[in-house]
Image (cartoon, rainbow, N blue to C red; front, side, top):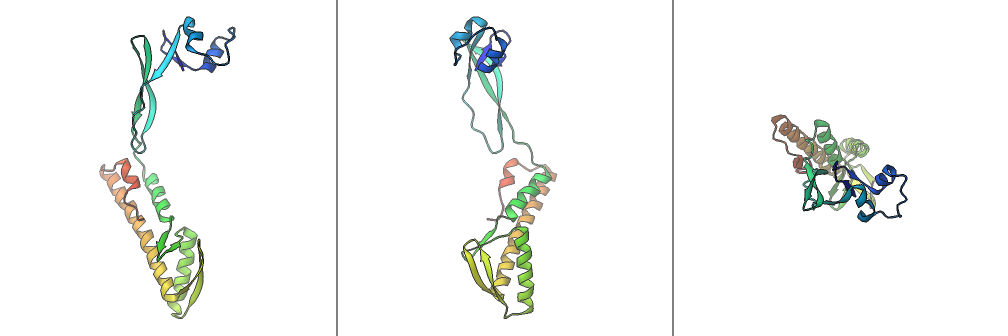
Length: 186
């Protein structure tokens, strides 16, 4: 990257070629090729370490002992909105749970299937079924089906409870961007 020493405008090799079409530059343009045109090499400060959600943008360009150095500006993470919090809740809600070593899908379709199986298990205590998991099929009794439903429902409700806490913090002005990824049920 180069810099116009008069305007302090950065320019890359493509920009140099466009600005000076009458000059036949070699395939790789170096400082020596553009020095007579009023350009210098542009150096950068070391990039700062960013916190979650922060972004880095090029900052001011300064001259230091004949060198041109560009700093960085750390842009704070934007404060999430209620929609961002709801999206994060949905991610946690549908991430699934592990119950007695068995992964249970907690996506919306699976929640509906669990509810249907639970209703049948409540109507018929002798009911059993073969439930499909990522590891394959497992046989579940009515009591186990109700246990799966109870655990899945507790997980989903915990996700909604965390969403409500975050929305309260957002309304109270105490919300920090880091909170968006903290406190969700595992």
